[in-house]
Image (cartoon, rainbow, N blue to C red; front, side):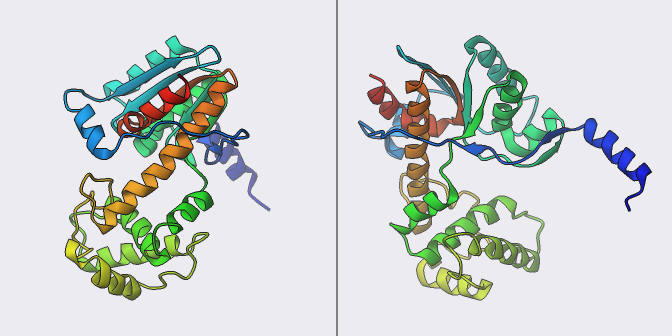
Length: 288
């Protein structure tokens, strides 16, 4: 039997914390949406943004609904000006639904700690929860994303890509070589066991062999640059997967937004600025 005093203390601690129960829901698109026009390429994106600064905000009003799309640069600082800017825009826009890049996750703590963990995207949940409106992720499901990736790339390279993408964010300069390999091995075990990727890369040795075979032009994976998996105008074999997975995410995000707007919603959307810039022509074409 649990001690009553411990239960009492736990209750007090929980009641004093902001608590997110689980990841955001996926939005169920229930209409056929054909996308018109093309997304901006990375080259077009860079040319378009040449004389502009972040955030990039896209506003569209139609006879059915409205969109306020906040294209941020990612921050984990609760004092960054974007945080108050988003709150001000939210209040003026008065949304009926919010959607965001990122799936978020379980959090114990304050608003500040949410932002420190999930950057400005945490505000989608915080503000939506406060105003009692639904909040959805703009991300496709994992199964859908992996299925699209497998249509273009070998499964073992996809597993390597997803492992490296997290590895590059979690690797620290002070880590020893042994610590770096331990981190990579842990992440490979997690990514390689996910739905659709099971059994594709079973050990760090297999990852190392694949790297030497297909990615050695990038140097040692233990020391590659932090942004090696990111989309690029001149993609390597690794960043080409970053380009493609972002296209998959962009297509899904646009369909979510269009479906919500056509149902009469006022949609406040959050995404990294590059996504908004790339999606803009497709959204405007679809909404005339």
